[in-house]
Image (cartoon, rainbow, N blue to C red; front, side):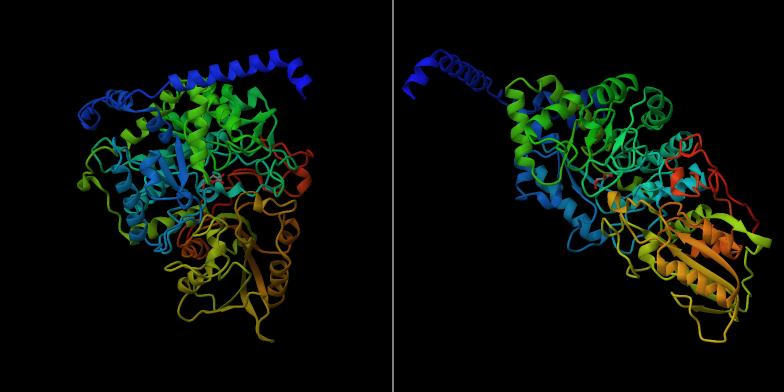
Length: 631
Ligand code: BGC
């Protein structure tokens, strides 16, 4: 042993000296004392950039680093940590809610957190984020709008703007000021579990509706005439929807969190334009995806995050990472943090552990691995959004828009009707006459509001069943739309009392709720029970209409040939009556498919120009939809 030490003593000496040097550097680089408080940043008459610089100049390193942390509320170890660590934001991950899951319960919870940050020296307000991706659907009893794919089918930016504004109003009432929406992904493969979260696979439509959604969310702030309402977050930057089946980096998934082939042309002509449009519309935060583009995760690509997005596209807001995304695929949280922040991520979503994050950034800065300038840049961007939201200013309640609950439900019902796509209508069976004497209804989605809403409703994966308050099932909508003399009978399995027959059978079939990679399916088809229900119904009804309640087109070429009418209802949300509106001609069918409907799985993926993988024609092309007049 002694020999070894003797042999290597020079090397050991040099290493020890080096370590001592680094240690000395770190110690010497002590925090400057906070300067005397200057409250200019609280003066709303001053320009935002002046306010930002004034505040930034007064912040210590610890206060700056805290701003970069976005913590899942259930992971906050002690309420006092919010001010102690100067946290920049909190979020309710999907399904994370207060014990009192009402608007007032949320408001009390979030106000409590905001009161906590007020205890800190500079009192920088929190961003409070959540996924209100189809209304503020975390809260039981609030209106749930169609998922975005349904909004895509409407191709109606004005409607989308109103939906977003109504969502923002519900969020603001509950104290939340930040929405992880709109989703600008472009699904090219229906096997993916997130198809329904996107508007379309057409970059032009995604841009148009994305802009409308950003504007709708951000309009109508209450703090002052100029403040934005709720901070929008276009996501997921960039290229998502084009992952290749079987490349998921998550062992439980197949395509979600997978790899996108890097192609500069596609990047610039397909994936970037919706983000560029959203930035022009005033987006001040953008979420980076969990996927890989080319040979690395996007979260670590400086070229995409800093050079292209912040440089070329002139994005002045902040980049937030998605869930555990900064750390995915890395064993060292330290190295992962250094890479992501230097690539251009400004705020890190921390579902579990913020103390390690704060420690990592502090040490990385001390060691010169993350520069002061990079930290200042990130903080500036986050503060810019906070000032834009008017969080530092006294709320002007008079500016708050109040929309009655009935008006919001009517808006959602309109959206449902406009999103429904008529795909087959033999002999104009639709619209149905409300005075049809007897209607048989079957299928697992007819009387199941949970299936109608899909995931991201109360729980991350949604709830299968008839649980929510105030919502209307499609069956209830049908029952309310017919004349008093009409008999509507319902059997999920399509088996009715022997001997009875009906002129019309309506099968409402589809998918169970699922979110993210849990919805990846090699073969998206109807389940056995629904297929049998259609067959049973065909035996007892003269003519059968199938309504699909699903997050994506399903492979059902076989079923289609044998039925008289086919309607795609997507995931319509809480207002099932909107489906009855188009069935019974209270509203004409105007919806069109926002993405192609494949015939078989060999056709997947389908390019944005509609070219299938095996070169054969799809069942219905993008923008197909039969239009028919109302009664
Ligand atoms: C999803 C994001 C979402 C985030 C926060 C992630 O799992 O990919 O779309 O915004 O969770 O809930």
